[in-house]
Image (cartoon, rainbow, N blue to C red; front, side, top):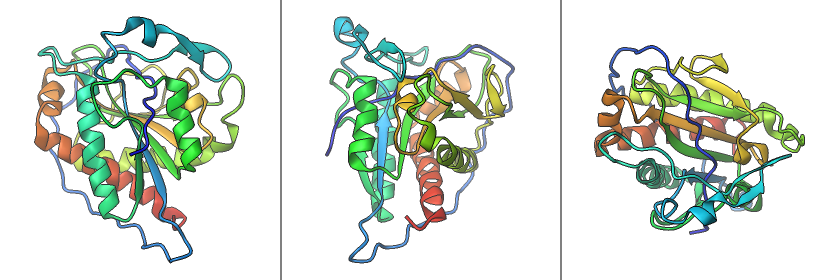
Length: 262
């Protein structure tokens, strides 16, 4: 497994509650089998944070390039009030998603291969996708917003301060909308409306996240639930929901790949 690791998590202010989710079945989309002369599409899954980050503040606080400015190497992520950590959730969902995508004919690269390490730094996480020639990178996170806030959202890149990601903005928007639709269908979670920079419910566009700023291939970030909301904390702690979340991500990825026959 190729390693490096996660984009920064995005944690946001509060808003209004929404009804409890009702998980719904989603239709599986399969990627066409590549011909002998056409390699399988490569998808990079980037599970946020890492299990060793909290014990190594000097390493994760070191500043690294972030697309025209500098940011800390990494962060610890959030957790449920009961202590279930975002890094563990993200890694579990990433592994489940990888299994689904590989079964559909996709080559998957993970930016980290365990949940006990430190980092990798956010700039290194972006570099893996470029090195792999990724058709798409999905960074998997869960938010740590106010307890009243509900729902999931997808973050797509805005133009980075240094302009380096300009070529992937339009195609990343397409991928973000495919993921938004498929994840919502699979999980039944509402599209978050508690964020201050919404393009539409469940979709934001940001230029402060290093992984998206440094992207040179299509890239999006998923905040798949709010871990500080009691209902959603119960969901992310449930392996059955994590399997459903993985299916929603895999469906969004394969819908995007099918657009151009990747």
